[in-house]
Length: 315
Image 1 (cartoon, helix red, strand yellow):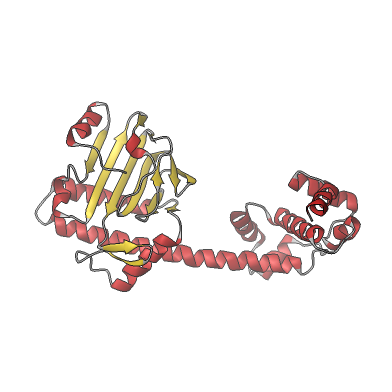
Image 2 (cartoon, rainbow, N blue to C red):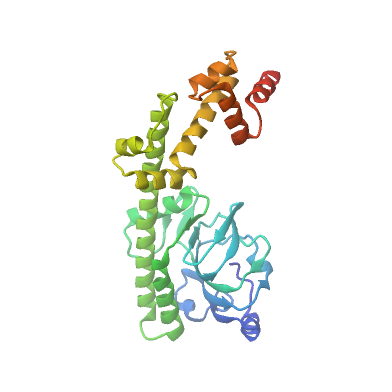
């Protein structure tokens, strides 16, 4: 969130039926003693509020949002994202993020902006002397955050406790709260590093899974593929295999295989060789030209004959 609000405006918001805490550069409160924290907020909104400060913006820090309740339509680097309860969003200093309509929906949102000692697109992340996390993990965390143009961890409920602990320490301001806050942030950031590292590894494994499945099907498009047999090839049961394929592609196995057949058919139509549509239908594993034409039309919105005609005109 941008920080052009004053202490008076903060009080006004609470009078309007909104409650919580928001400390920033113009009203630092307890974060005055923690200069690496640019902002910390935990606000409950009882009604929709329009606020220009919520529009897509940049901050010279790592910005983290955690949603406790409500639904927030967000944009990160031009991508529309729906933030739901227990979602955690993380952006780098050069990532535009915010509400495209400048609208804060009803709900409870937490946010934290950390100002690193150094962090740019060509400069490794260095959090500063307050942080005891080893340099190699800091730099890897910076790379993981930067590798995606803004990222969202879904169902990240474990981070709720971190924001609750930060709010408690900052609002109470007991002796040594600065030390406690640093410890909480270090643990939060190490968990974030682990989650993002796992996410990257899982993404690579997912790519290998789909790549292997695609290669296997392309080796023999005319084969009648049985889901149980494919699942066995991957060392999975039918249900687990089906769930995995649908999670990664959006389609159950048989439907995904049809998509691969259509993909191959398009490649053949667009190739320099003048294939007959009946030959394409057979090569791609369709039972007949009519079956191929019907399926192609349903999946693409255009008949294979017309697709071929348009391709030849462009060629």
